[in-house]
Image (cartoon, rainbow, N blue to C red; front, side, top):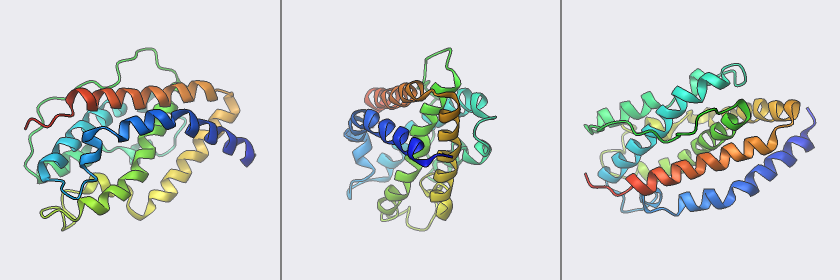
Length: 199
């Protein structure tokens, strides 16, 4: 594979999603899990919101990509969030639909998956803060943010290899970027609407 072409595309993808990414990170609910004052309730609420994101993706996006990304089954996260919430005795009300667009094609779906897989890298960073909270400091209730553990880097690399190979073969970078921006915007709106922790 011609690395410069892939690198070019990834650079473009990163720069065109930078604003949407920044907006999402600036929301109070996003900031809460990096706060030294984070409480278990904030944490549970964040996990509950991410449950909506992952369950939506696993139901609607994964089926479109099962022949493109070879290890999708291993990338499922909803059951990890269920495990954490169960350990913390937090009852999630109901699932809310985060991604409402119909007629999603493969490139657009890849853009959405790029955002979610990228968040797993950030999860390792968040884990450092989460593990300082009493009740979460014994490797229990943190399986979602543990992600792929010490394989997180190689999982990301494998994803990028298949992701960029598909883009190169199909020359669909613009659609992938649209999907990624759409994903950031949907998650942003979800956090904005449901982000106030009323529990």
